[in-house]
Image (cartoon, rainbow, N blue to C red; front, side, top):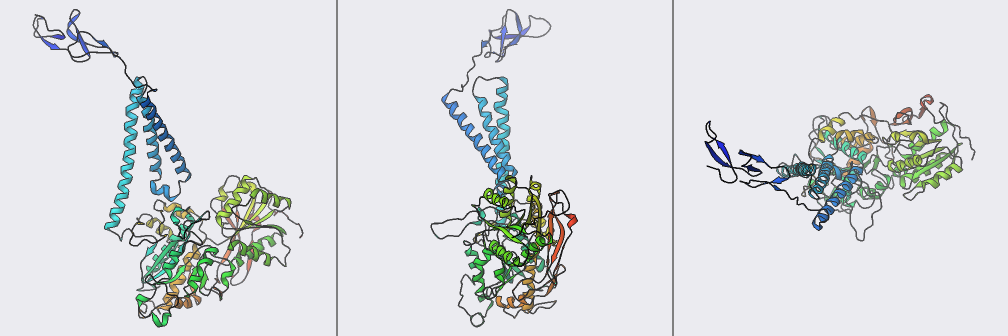
Length: 635
């Protein structure tokens, strides 16, 4: 008996004549003349169906690269790869911006990288296949597509969870810009800034959160929040009274008025003609905002101050140092915890006189702050040996190469830079790039403690940097507050309470990043909030246990108490003179050492008496000696 065609014999028992027949599976064949008992495997290049007696040669079919469908798919893949790479570069350049951080930060690069690799694996599906191409077309695509999809799912889950939790537990997800209380302090902080003038065809406010981010101002914003929290936790200051705040991102000189109107309104209405003593008798008819902290720059304060001055709402400012705010006829309710430009200029002039430099340049910002500084400088050097050889305002269109040529032609080696941080950074970076050398740079307090510039490559080549700075005062508990507050989630999407320019997109910032930036103006912010709290404490006739709840407090009552301020804060006696300027504090004289730090080398005390000192031995001059370079030109 023979087996049917395509069947192999399977022996039963000990005799070969006893067998059963089994059909050969796919990929095998039976050679009945050679070995009728075993199904033989076909070669890799061959194939067979079930029950075959021979193998057929495989014919390779594939989509060539020249196929129109393949060309379109490959072009689309290349476009996706290029787009992913471009997005990665753009994200890398703007890595520290809130937009990138809120989008996922490092996760963005993982998603874009996986998208690129998924797209590249498409190429292996076309052309004549090989063993390696078959592996590369499947495994990488499955792996990278899975990772990419997982990242999308995780990020979506995070966002959905945050919004769901914010809706269920609104108290846990409050806005950083608002805190309710019996009395409110307004806060104006330039968390974002308008880098270029914005032109509109119709009247509209500006969305600050779409503008470049200023981390150092966000730090000051957090410092005000911390100050209010600390006062509320105090048992001695404002007992049984809660203090709150209403803060705004004040990024523009002239397009941030909705926030200002909110602060000066009562129940959504502004009535500048009302007589508060006669017409406002109940608490609901009185604004809860008793004072305002900020804004930061002199130009910003000059723009909004008249609106607060009308109703004598106190403005306790932490950064506007222009001298004209001391004119009480124009600014009757303006006080400040930062010293006037007059004191800063006095410190700068003392440095120049100390080293007997006579031939100097004065570079200043093209705004109220800068022009005020130049005017004060000219008045101060009138009867001295100092000669102003060159003065220039620093504008967006300034040609730094032409400016430095003029300075070189006039043989000027001492350059005073009286400008805000960003303007000074642009100037110094230009000096590095243009290889400007052998200069002594004297920095104003707005940028003398800059964290970035002293560590820039090439900074040593430009010469020696000295400066006048506010003393760095450590605020106890602030670091712990920042770490704890960054572990919480704040909702910026609660439409019920959200107002114009109360959005930051700062949730992805780490506590370390916030604490590492320039600490200048920290104590002025801290002392401004405490000055308002002490004034309110006195207006409410508080003792150590409770305050008088029967007193209706108006902003002008808080102003009257502010003018009489006299309390101690971190070993400083906080008082104001008749011009609303602080009568306490001092300045440090700093030198940018070769370790990239602003090292304190002296001081300038002006209260209660004037005292100026510089330790010359601590300065390492660009001349490689320890003696200051001599600039002895005569006017």
